[in-house]
Length: 514
Image (tube, rainbow, N blue to C red; front, top):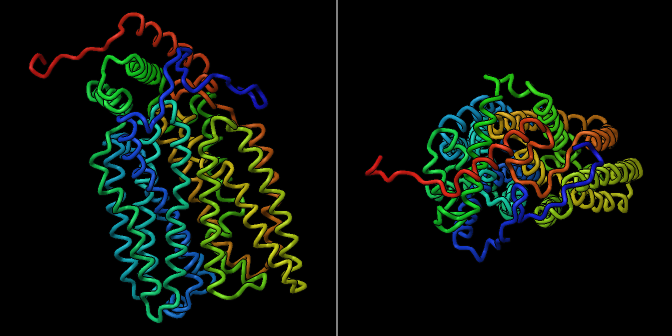
């Protein structure tokens, strides 16, 4: 669908043009259990949020600064090395998720992260601390590459957009825990002022590891690996409380199976599949832009270097800096989570456009206020910077927090979903590496003038979003291909309809008969 076209008007209880009863998840036993389990899976994003906020907080902790005595470039490397670890894991992540399943990829990633957290907590020098962060980045990347796939492929179609949008907002849960932990420990006159936040970084991972064995595998992955019987069982258990003959379950199963068959017929072998068709090139361009824009919008300045920004405008007290950091993360979570529930009603394109345009306006105002605070020593301008940071992140969280994952994962067909998300994460980590290495040096050398770069780039982002991003609301996962690959989508739709006419119930032989 071209930019500016009318958004889909189908209600969320329509699937393939057929109406199914609307489902309230908390009144349905199967969905209650499913979303409880998926609630632990989406905590993968919380580990990333914990790290960013923890490093933000540690850089305001006197004992950490005195113990390691990092220079500006070394602080940049400490933050950027996490992205290096993530980038190194990205080629492995989609292969592992597609080969051995989403759950195993998450489990392996969490295990590697545990090793990194243990090493970070026990660090006695800067080299050891840096190495530990590489391992944390590597492990989180493996888990992060599989978790959103599992969430979107298991969720009920009526709730998919909301829960996948919630996935990335849990970043703020980890961020809040880390921010207030460092606020509580920065007064400790020993290395435990930073070792306690370090060890707590494992908390979200412990929660995930405790439940991961109970989380079902993706039915789409099972069907793709000739385990259709298991896939039908999972769809029935969680979407219809065990009823294999349920009409919705039958439709979902048939649509997934036939769509995967079509994708297999037209797919090319190898990485070239990502750009083999016009539709895939469009998808990849969206993923690349979304990955870079999500981190090159100025948000990483605050996410990793809020201490430097506040010191720059005259707010130098470590306790005050930690309080602002903690309150900002609570505010961010409230806005991001609230907007995750509005993605279907508001639409993807309007949210992205309002969010990006709003960020641009707020960042221009932030730049002006910073100029007066730095050059004139204005306390009022310094306070205005704090207020504008809150307003800027309000705009950011309208779309870029939740829809960064929720939108990109839904536009990718199963065959390239894992690899497409790896492209997204590669771009995110490249942008993070660039930001985290450059930001502290640029802030130190050119001060508020550095913000002008982000003002210009945000205007560029708005233009790209306007012309590139496609509206997908109220569209089931297998049917989103219609906005990118019309011939393939129509062929898949015809085969699904034919298959449903031929059989209303999919039966499998019992184990004894088999």
